[in-house]
Image 1 (cartoon, helix red, strand yellow):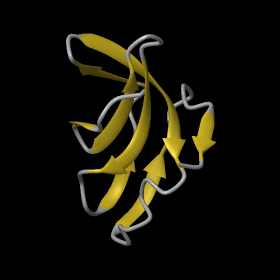
Image 2 (cartoon, rainbow, N blue to C red):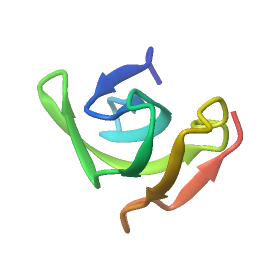
Image 3 (cartoon, rainbow, N blue to C red):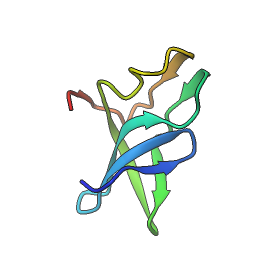
Length: 77
């Protein structure tokens, strides 16, 4: 994994060897959010496969988060 990368409403940790991404936080501060099934960064597409359990911990203004079918895990950091 590398340093967090901001793409759209979220920050991700990217795994360049597997071309996967984990949601590590939100750049949008309120309302309902929808996590995309893939993101484009650093010249490649990454499939979003997980969310870190504390990705939205410090943001009480988010009312809902919709997960794509590509998310297969919620990880503890």
